[in-house]
Length: 387
Image (cartoon, rainbow, N blue to C red; front, top):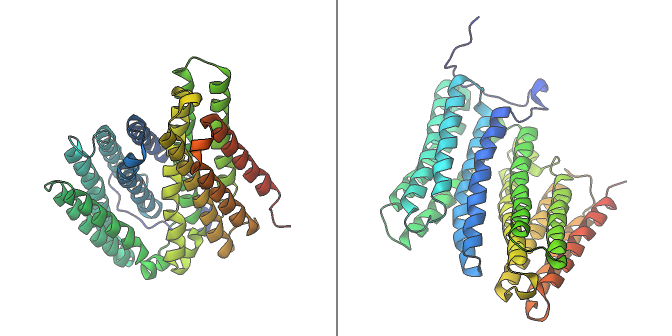
């Protein structure tokens, strides 16, 4: 029997044969476009590397991340890998490419393009949910809830294109608030139709790999633009060790995520685990940019604000990892002891405290201290498995 070119959406749930569902080749290709977007975000932070630019970096990062999250959660429930679904994915990839082009000046000359890109991506997602609800009657309460909430956000974002600053940023914030609150208030619907937990956990892990990869690229870029010397080489190696440490700490527990709570309608716990990934991936991106600046500016002559920004980036990562482990432990989804929460919190406090005394220590010393702290976390992980 010939497979239809435009099959209707079907609801995909964790049936026995799909419990170990893995990312498709198309999903991996889709992620590559977000590699470009994250690279542009890192470049934007790098070009204007100061504390005042952090809010701008965050406001540009969140919509990109939220587009990826929206598409991923839709695909895990309704994607058939059909001809039509592939065309939609191609359109989404094109939209993200346009968004990436407009990131660099997303608050001034490119603001209109950035806004329309976000509106187009999220508007397409709303249409997908409406279409899925039309064809899958039992899932209609869930799809209607998502389409309504996300649709309101799309309209708010669209209206922001026609107002000046600072009102535009206020509308962005309101739109993102509605976007984030919509899944949080959908507990009774999600309980009936939860996403594939193993698939979502893997996909989130893949996005984390993207930003970890950006950290590695930043280190290589920094060392390639610098005349090699002992300090720059050691700094670059420490940057890679820090990135590797975060990889170790994160991926030892990611497969046991608190997203499992969504199956029981406990959206606050499940989505808290998801949303904590936002400061984590932003912190990882900022860490890579910080290492690049430490290398290219010569670690002997790095400014105090640069050192403080580096400290805040590492602090954000460690604090996020502490909160992720705390959630996983409280829902019984980790093989590690609760003590890891305290280890990571203590490490985060040490990093922040060290960052506040950057007047008295060199950038090279700062890098060595942070590398030692991250390596200690690996040792503590190894020794904290439940017997």
